[in-house]
Length: 315
Ligand SMILES: *[C@@H]1O[C@H](CO)[C@@H](O)[C@H](O)[C@H]1NC(C)=O
Picture (spheres, rainbow, N blue to C red):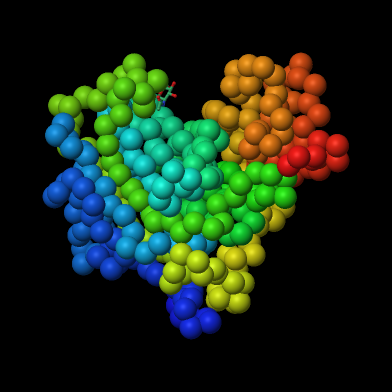
């Protein structure tokens, strides 16, 4: 792996960090249920009836390409949730979430994603996976640059949350975030909406992590910003977006594996579609596919379209 250390403006360091859990993370709860093993190359979290466990990054990041390999709780994982996410602090925090909702043996996990900006979420998209995530490690990545938050699974993009600040939609680009992960019991809602409970006779439940890799900005203060010249020129992630191949692969995933998209959920818009500013990043196609809606709103997540000018007033 190319490791570059660039010093920019005396205060800002673009770093590539790889794979030592001792160096990059702190166990934050669960006592010895969280373990760092193999000289820092492997981390395991476990959950039993008394407690789950979790860890967080030592660094706070503002933008980056962050990869983690995770092997999820095998067997009967119903009721368990393995959360892996980036988050800042406070009531107007930003957050980028992967959550893996466990299931009965042989039934598929649900991969739940969400993006919070300025404390507001409600942008859930859920997927099935095209492999058994408990059999082996798979790479879950967040590409976060000033224009996109792209969720990827084994390099395949599944979701692209675009920067549409110009249309009045907040984007996470000013608050530093830490990486967090936890394994916990959520059997009041996780599996089939809470119908299937955790089978404690199968405890402890264990998830494993390895090959953490981060090409990131680590601003030295909350106010310093990552500049485009602060990232390695071969890093690419700063300017990265989906090329046509990437867009096609994402469409394939969304067509075949997406099981929930907040955008198409008209039950959440009982009074009809809200003004575009509060749609918070939905695509026209997702809304149109729910038919019978006179969609004049031209919005996003996977497709950027232009808003009619008269609708941009007041944004
Ligand atoms: C668990 O499996 C059932 C049956 O296939 C499915 O309906 C459900 O969405 C799966 N995931 C969760 C988290 O309940």
